[in-house]
Length: 202
Figure (cartoon, rainbow, N blue to C red):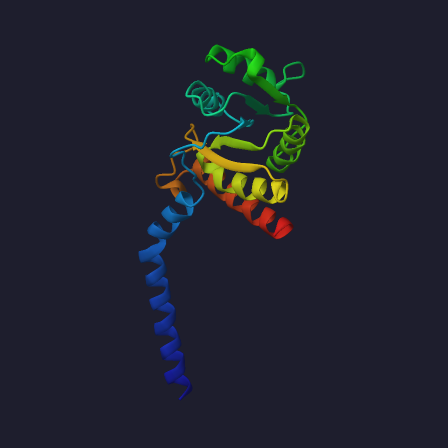
């Protein structure tokens, strides 16, 4: 009897390994795709909030593009980090936004945040100070789902209506991400952060 059960368990174990091997690619592909948020039909808002942390200005360019489309009359740049000991990231974002055609008078700054959570906290403060009631949050597509979760939590009960726009950047190609060290770092780090934020703020 024991041998029969061991035989069955061995068969089950081998079957599970075979199933995992067969399904690993679609499962891992879905894990990468699930991080992403697109930008279909962006909603008109009082302000476009652009989150810092971009590599080559992709988020700022997308915010400027939406501004020029008339999606919102104001652009709020959110980043409190330094690019060097004398250059603030938000200065680079501001200059790029102006270069892309945004009127400097329509640019607002939030310069205290150093994380996505703080992006939400401090932009909410600015929104309430200015009496703004709606915002379109722009970030990288792979950062979009986590940003939406955090912003929705932080803004809950504020009366401010949020919508979201994810834009591709140099880190957005998740094709066979499990075979590439740099892609693995982006996907796995983002999933780890999503889990941490979910545990902390659920």
